[in-house]
Structures are given as structure tokens and as C-alpha cells.
Length: 274
Image (cartoon, rainbow, N blue to C red):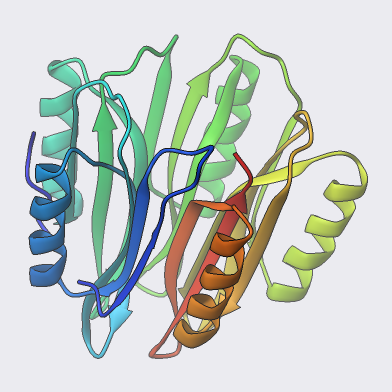
């Protein structure tokens, strides 16, 4: 299993649920702390489910979720430039891996990439990074026409402009789904409420800042309803309080996005009941 190149955790979140696999989440992890935690968790039989990069105290930080479960071979990396990510993409694709998650994030006006790959069975998949808004729309239209479903969406900033990184997969089921990006906080809430009233559930949320403005991107699916909670624009103390509350109620953290509001760190997350 490949080391995460930029694995920090001043705040530690963990839970063992009777109906869920054992899992742990960490945030405000500096690169060195992330690497240490990554090695520790992998050594204990966990796999990385999610990694999100952002800036805190002037350096890269990471928000991550680990889960102990049966898993196909997997690899991860973070802190790669666009060119290095592209090279690693070609290398791992040639080895039979596919992208499970890819996130772009900006530190000191430079874009970096973190990704999780695995060899679990998929019908077909696509992944793109560095897309402009128009490029994202063009690929969205093309892949949707071919029967792909967007499974992960990450927004970030490059030269004061929005860029997107995505993962698409073909699926046997034909459940309806919806995705939207570049939403302000109020727009995201209005979209969330509308889609919820139509039977959709949020399955992915990402916060990102571009040229000083914070946006949100989300994916919703119309699937059999189960208890879930979506929260965003949380500072670290509020997120920790929410985590403790939802953990006690039997929820599992499934989506975890760290991002910036100015220089301050913020968190968005989705919890689900197993």
C-alpha cells in the first residue's frame, strides 16, 4: 500500500457503532501529523475513505476518514502538483486502479491534489481535474449522456478562478441524481431544501473559496430514505460538538470537507445512520 505523501490531528474523532464498521476521523492535520496518523491507521488495518486538503495557520492541513473494513487493494496520495497528479494518474490507471475520490485544494495560490484509488469492481469510470466552469459543464453533459453518474465533486481556486475535480462512474441502478456547484450558502440551503422535498438525499458536499468568496458544491440522489444530517460552515469547535452529538446518536461520518473562509478553517460534512 502506498504511503500518503502528505498525510495532523489536533482534533481527534472516533466512533465504534454496533451497526457500522469501526472508523475514525481527524482534522487540522499538518502534513507530518497526517503521515504519522496514516501509517498508524493503515498498520492497524484501516483504509482511507476520504481526504480533504485546506489551509490552516499558513500551511496545508487535512481532514480525513479512516474505516476498518474488507477492501480491495487501494492507494492514496496528497500534496501533488497538477503535473505530478497527472503522472501518478497514468501510473495507477495502468496498474488497474480507479479513482474513488480526488480533491483539489489551494495553498499559497498553488493548486495541489489528493486522491484515493482502489481496485474495487466498477463498470466504467472517468475522472477529470483542472476543469474550468465551462469545461466542467461540457464534461458533465457528455458523461451524463453516456450514462455516467457523478460520484464526487471538488471545487478549488487556480489564479482566482474556479476549477473542478470530479469522479464519474457507471452504475447498474438508474436512480435519479442531481448535482450543482458554485452555490453560496443561501443558495445551497435553498437547493438542499427543494431537493429534499422532492425525495433526494445529499450524498456529497464540498466547500471551497475562490477569490475571497465561499461556494458549495453538492450531489444528491433519489434513493430509499435513511436518516442523514448535512452540516456546513462549521468552525472547528462547532464541528467537534456536532460530531460528539451525532456519534452518540449512532451516526457515521461519510463525507468530510475542510475549506477556508478567508484564512479561517471551516468544515462541511454528511452523517448517515447505518
